[in-house]
Image (cartoon, rainbow, N blue to C red; front, side, top):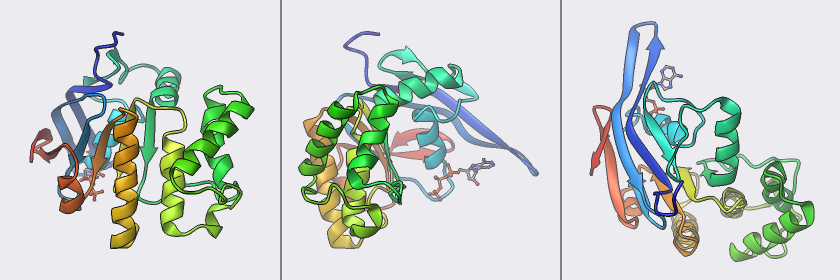
Amino acid sequence: MSDAAPPLRLAAVERRYRTEAGELPVLTGADLTLQAGEIVALVAPSGAGKSTLLHLAGLLEKPDGGEVFVEGRAAGRLPDDARTAIRRSTIGFVYQFHHLLPEFTAEENVVLPQLAAGTPRAAARERARALLAAFGLQGREHHRPGRLSGGEQQRVAIARALANAPRVLLADEPTGNLDVATSDRVFSELLDAVRNRRVAALVATHNPELARRMDRVVTLRDGRLVPA
Ligand SMILES: Nc1ncnc2c1ncn2[C@@H]1O[C@H](COP(=O)(O)OP(=O)(O)OP(=O)(O)O)[C@@H](O)[C@H]1O
């Protein structure tokens, strides 16, 4: 592992699914390098393999071929527990629907991943408060998700994704569930947070306006990543 290694690199990544109709090749040799502070949009038609790519990049699944390097380390094919440890300390996820734990407060939702990564509770709470404040959620820390607006819920989800100071952020339609004005605002906050922290981000979206606001746009063609 070297400081110069990019936070995330996909090299000739392959993934195929076995279906009743036979093998479905979804990724056939996907290459991508994300540098620190770089935000890349992934825009491709439904079914092209965006979620599959994000799952592989996030070490949630293993590739059938090729490799996923995280901070220079070949990580994609490690055993489950090793991939989980790298994922917890290095990678944050934001989904279209917030996936917050409904029975926990906003603050607890941001504290829990830190506890899972071994951060002491007092430090985790302090960091959660700072992150929530950075997203304009002072005074809302003790609300459960059901008592927050859609935009606020998504801000908590972004704060949670950043809780363990990840080097890589993976997002799947991170504001796709919000109205246009709220989506615009929350997306700006997401971009600022990622840029300020020098996180490398890959953001899947169907929204060309949002894609244009990122550093570059890639698409999937026949299972490979190409410039859009
Ligand atoms: N577990 C699975 N088993 C079999 N086929 C799958 C599986 N997961 C995904 N697929 C298929 O692989 C292809 C790519 O799916 P994926 O979910 O990655 O696409 P996507 O680009 O994220 O689509 P969307 O924009 O609709 O979310 C699709 O044809 C899908 O039906």
